[in-house]
Image 1 (cartoon, rainbow, N blue to C red):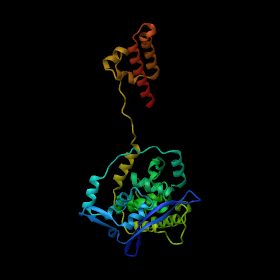
Image 2 (image 1 turned 120 degrees about the vertical axis):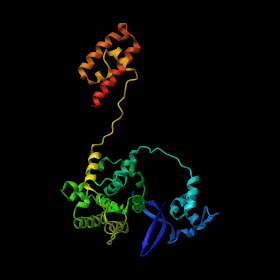
Image 3 (image 1 turned 30 degrees about the horizontal axis):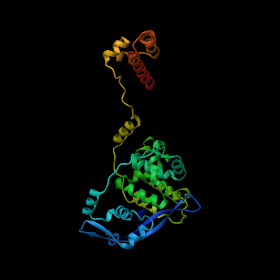
Image 4 (image 1 turned 180 degrees about the horizontal axis):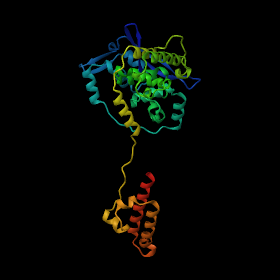
Amino acid sequence: MYLASIRHGESTFYQIRRSCRHPHSDSYYPQLVFDLGPHPKKYFELFNQEIPLFDTTLLEAIEEHCPDSSEIILEKLLWDFLPGQTRDILSRFSRKTYNRPRPLNESEREEIARTVHIFDRRRLYYLYYGAIDQTRLYRMHEKLCRPLLHKSRDEREFYFRNLERQISPGEYHNYLYAAFNLQRYFDVSYAAFLPEALSFDEISELMAEAICQLNEDTAFWLGEELHDLLHQHLQRYLFMFFDFSPQQRLIENEFVRNFINSHRKFRWPERQPDVTDEKVISLFSLPYAQLKKMEKQELTRLYRQKAMQLHPDQGGDQELFVQLTEIYRLLMAGKKQQ
C-alpha cells in the first residue's frame, strides 16, 4: 500500500491505494483503499499525547487487505502527519533490523528487463549516484530497480516522489536534464556534466518535447489508459524545471570531480605471505620485494629449482615445500592482476 497525494487548486487530497495485478496481463493497476480527504490527521487521535489511535473505519479498510499489520502500515503511511514527539517515541521502540539484500533471481531479472522503463533507470541513476552524465548507466546495479517490481505506474511515481525529496530545488534542472538524457542533443564536451552552460531556451524546448513523448509512451504507463492532457505525474516535472533556477557551479570543480570519478577504480588490498621476510629469503634465497620484480619465466625457473630441493619425494621438508608453493602462487597471482 502507498499514500497518494492529489493536488486540486490550492488544496491537496490524500488517498491510500494499493497495486493490483490485472487478471489477464502482467501489469498492475492502482486500487483505492481509503479516501483520507484533505485532512488525514482527523483519522487518528493521540493517547496520552504520544500513541496514535486510528479511526475504526480506516482500520477496517486496511485490515481487509492486511489483517495482521494494519496499524504498522498506517504508522508508516501517515508518518509525516504524526507530531514530532510521537515520531520520536515510535522510532525509539520500533524494531530496527538489517536484512542483507539477496541476489536477484531469474524471474526478477526478467521482470526488470520487461517492465522497468529507461526513464525509471535514468532517474534512479541520478538519485543514487548524483550523475548528470548517463553514459555509464549500464553500470547501475539492477538491485536498485527491485522496489519497482509488482507495482503499478501510479505507485512507482509516488515512490519516485519520495526519493526526489532528497534533492534540492537547485538540482531539479540537472536531475531532469539527466533523466531525459538531453545531453545526446549536444556535441560540446561539457554537455555531459554542465548543462548550465548550454542555452536554457534550447533545453526548454527539448524538455517539453521529451515530456510530451513520455506522456504518449504506452511502455512507460504499463497498461494505464493514455489521456490527451499531460498526466499529473508528469506535470510536476514541468513545475520543477521552469519554476526553479539551477544552482551555479564552477566548471573547474565539475571537471576535477568528473576526472577523479572516471579514474577511480577499486582494487583489493594486495595479499602478503603469511611467513616472515626472513623465511622467504631462506626458501628462495631472495627477499619478497625482489621476487615481485622478477619476470614470470625467471620466477618459475627459480621456483622449480627450489621445489626440487624441498620436494618430499626428494627427501625434502613437506611443510617448507608447501610454504614455497604458496608464496610462488601468491606472486604469480599478483602478476596476473598487473
